Structure formats: structure tokens, C-alpha cells
Image 1 (cartoon, helix red, strand yellow):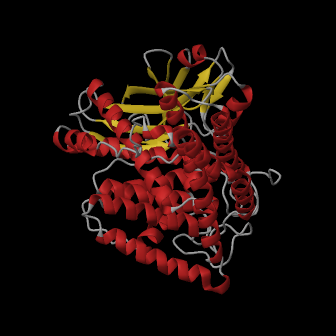
Image 2: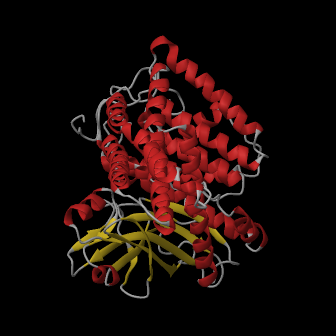
Length: 516
């Protein structure tokens, strides 16, 4: 097996994602090997023993079949895309080939077990029929009934906007300020500009939902331009040279131009299938898969791809999805994921997104906001903001917080810009400091603190050992012209000695009516 490398390596070289994929496949094949060894040693006699043996044989066969099919599929994809100039992982290809050769004997061993111990006896025993387990499709019917029939359009917009902005958490530039560009800006400047562009892009995309959208290359370039304003040259323009790490598609042999042409064809097929629900979702997954594989822009490919994906989902009436990097990576072409893998992954994320939609709608209804005006949605480094009309007018703030007892895991969360506590009591005892100001970095006016009365609900965990919580609160908005144009806040735990203030920027929100 190749030696494990670091996080940023040549696209062809072994990295931590290769390690995870390899260990998953090897673990399943080892389990199949152990089961086959037991089957070889067993001598079933009698009907009950034979039926039990057959059930274990079928389970082992399915385990082996699925693991070996994935092993071979990844090799095929890496080989095929490698010839087309994609930066696929050759070290992983080699390791998968070794894995296939090492465990190929299991197929014959399973056949021998069936012939030798089940075949003859099966003539006298009624064996249960084989069944194929297929992944169930998301329950779109229940979702559409609630979304289109029982939810005001402005509430749907508010929910979709919050879910759309949640994708910003996966951007290193938005959360930390680091970037692939060498433009001399500080991390603080990068955070401010990237967050501003992301919010502006989201608002502009939502403003086009009722308009015809030409699904093509120009749409991708427009989204990228919105995200990259003032972040350096090249916004909305494809790169003209290879990445230093050979990621994406290379320019030799006109690979880049050919794959962009192919992407344009797939985008056209996506547009033409818009009114065929299942076909549209499959083609949308293909478009996203190719876009991420090509990596056509010098920076912000992930943000642009996810904004594109979610724009089209929302235009279809579906909730925006938040991609999970750990789950998305196995579906990427670089690691041998296929278009079918990406399609299955997109359906899985849609299933999750619909559950998030149900939860967010329940919150609006529980808080009494479902039939009130909800507007001016914004996002800043993991914090969600929006204003609630009515009497009194409110500012609603929401964010996720984590509890993790492992110091290394907690440090990793902190480095990602997350709000993370070592114990749950610190989470429940946290204070949120709020104030109004004329601009970021300016002194606060009407400052106050909240140390109780916060809505805190534990959510399903995404990572073992890390508890996840939804935190929400609302404060009264000042009358126009009073207090300041911005609302700002930070989070502290005096007992734990923790301060979360967005790298000294605080989490800031431009109120409706305030000029930037």
C-alpha cells in the first residue's frame, strides 16, 4: 500500500481520502474473507442448519459482490478519465488493483461453498428466494404536499435562503479567509469580501428564480463572477494553465477544451430534461460531477458548483443541499467515483435536505414566524441572520454549536471556524454579546448580553464523538435611524475561558435599509 501523504499533494498521489476509501474497501473484503473461511469449515446438516448456512452464504456473497464491484468500478473510472486528462489518483488505482488481485479467490470459494454444501441438499429444501436491496428514493410526495400546499411562499423563501447559505460553512475562504489566490490580502479581508460576495450572490440568484435561466457555460461563469468580485483577477473566466498539483483537467492534447465542450453538452441535456423530474436530477448530478472534475476556474470551484447545483434545485422547487466533504469525496472523479455514484449521493443529500426543511418549517411555526414577513436573509461565517416583520420587528440569529471532549477533534473544529465547547454545560451557560454599530470594527451602541432564553436543540451528529446543536434567538430591531446600520454579536463562555468573535471581526449583519 502506498505511503500516506499530506492533505495537499499532487493529484495523482496518495492522500488521506485515498486512505479512507482503501481502508473501507479492504475492511469489507476482509470481512467477506472471514465469513468465507467459516463457511468452508461448516458442515450443515438438517433443514434449519442448511437454511442458516444459506443465509450466511448469501450475506457473504452480497458483501463481497458490492465491495469488489466498487473496487473494479473505481479502477475503470480512474483509467478512463486519466486518458481524458483528468487529475485522477494513480496511486489509488494501483492500490485498488492490488486489492482486487488479493481477494479475487473469494468468488470461486463462494461458488464452491454453494455447490458443495448447498447445491445437492437444496434439491430437498425450499431455499428462500434472493432479493435485491435497492436504495429507496426520497419521499418527494410528502415534501411537495407540505411545501406547495401548506406553507406560505415567503416562508418557503426564508427556509430555502437559510439552507442555501448553510453551504457557506464548507468554504475555507468564507470561514477562515484562506484562499488559493496569491493576492496579498489578509485573512480578515478575505473573509469579509468572500462573505459579502456569497450573500450578494445568493440574493441575486434568488431574485432570478421566477425568470428563465439558460443552463449553460455562461451561467457557471456568471455565478463564479459574483463569488469572486474583488478577490483577484479571473472572476468568471476559465483558467488558462494547469494547476500546480495537476488537479482538474490538464491542457495538454486539448484535454481542457474538449471536456468543456462535453460539459456544455451535458448542461444542455440538463436544461432539456427540466420537466422530467427523475431525468433532470440525474443530469444535474452529471453536470455537477463534470464541473467539479474539470475544475475550470482557478479558485472557488466548490462554491460555484454548489451555488449552481442549489440554484437549479430551488428552481425545481427542491430544497438546497449541503454537501458533506467526507461523503462527497468517494463520488468524485479524482477518486474513481462515477456519475452514478454522484447521482446516488445527490439523492441522499436531498433526503437529508428535506428533513432539514421540515425542521426549519417547524421552527418558523413554533416561533410564530410562519405567517410573518421574513426578509433580508444574510450569512456571516456560520451565523444566519434575518429580519422578522410585525410588532415588534425582530432580528433572528441562528448558528450551530458543537460539544466535543476530544481536544484534538475540538481544535480541528475551532480551526474550521466552528463554535465548539469541551462540555455541554459550557454550551448551555454561554453568553451572546450583542450590539449595534455603524460598520464592522466600529464601537457598539446599545450593547447588551443574552445568557439565557436561547433556543438550543441537539441535532443528529455528523461525526462520532461530536455533539451538534442548533442555537437560535431573536432580539428587537431598533427603529430606523437608531442604534446603527449593523447588528453584531459574539459568543463567550467565561467559565471555559472561550471567546468566539470571528477572528476579531464579530458576526455582523447589515440591517435592511442600511447602505453598505
